[in-house]
Image (cartoon, rainbow, N blue to C red; front, top):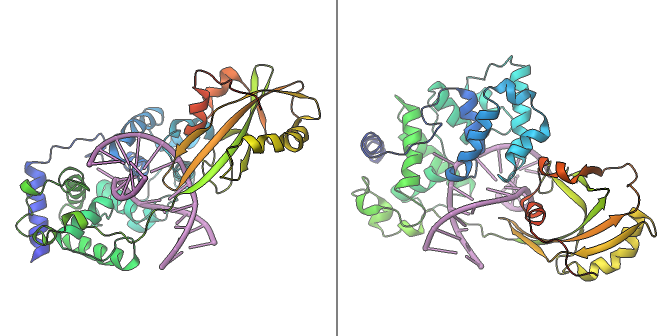
Length: 360
DNA sequence: AATGCGGGGGG
DNA sequence: CCCCCAGCATT
C-alpha cells in the first residue's frame, strides 16, 4: 500500500531529520494557532514570522485583539497584504470574545464557520489545538502528494482538488494528526520544494512516481495562467497647515481599510501627466475652488507589482489656501501620518528623500 | 467554476 | 521576466 509507506516514511523523517523550528510549533493555544495560520495564508513563513511575534506581543489573548482599535490592528498588519484577512481577524476576535465569552470553538465545523477560516485553516486549528483527525491541504501538501502519487490532474480544478484531498485523508495518521500535518508541511518546505527538490536524499525516492517518470519538475500541474492588469492612480497630496488630507479605502478593491491621498484612477495607458493637465481644471477646481490652491510639483511615476495587478502612481503636491470642506477626507498632521496604515506604494512615496519634481 | 485579493523572494 | 507561497470570500 503506497499510502501506508508514505505515512510511515514521513513520520520517520519527522522524528529523525526534521529540525525545522517555528514559534507556533507545538503551540496548543487555539488563539495563537489561529493567529499564526491566518497570517500564513498565502504567505511565506519567513515573511509572516515577524508579524506573528508583533501580534502576540501586542495582543496576548483574543480579548486583547477584540478590544483593539481597528486602525491600530491594521497598522500592525501593514505590508502583509490581503487585508481582508485582517478585517476578518478582527471580526472573528470580537465574535469569540463577545458571543462565545472568549472560548474558542473546538469542533471542525464550528471552527470552519469562523470568518476568514476555510478548509485549510480549520483543519490546521482542529488538529494542532484539539488533536482532531483532519488532514491539512495547502500548497505544500498538494505538491508533495501530486509528485509522490504522480497525480497529473491540475490542482487548481475541482477534480484535482478532490483527488488530492481524498489522498490526504487516506494518508493522515489518525493517532497523531497534529504531528503528521506539521511534518508534511515541513517536508514540502524543506525537501519536496517547488524548485530543486532534494530528491537524492528523499526518503520517498524508491517509490515516488514523479521521480520514476522524471516528472518532478512538471508536477504539480496548474491549468490557469497568471494575468496581470495595469492600473494607474493619480494622487493629490494636498497640504494645508503642515498636514495633508487622506481617506480610508473601503469597498472591494485592493487595499481595503488602508489609507490613501486624494485620488483618482486614470486610464492605465496614460502616465498621469497629460491626464493631470486635463484634470487640473475640472478636478482640482471642483475640489479646492478656482484659485484656492497652488501646484507645487509632481513626483516621478512610482510602481508596485502585485500578483494580479501592476499599479503605477504619480503624486502631485498641492498647497491649499483654505481647509477642505468636511467630507470623506480627513486632515492629518505630518507628524501623525506614520501612525496610519498605507499601501506599500504610498509608503514608498512618503519615505522617498525628495518629493518635489517637475511642474505640470 | 471563476475571479480578486498583497507582497516578497528566487530562478 | 516568471512562478510560488501554511487560502479565502464572493459571484
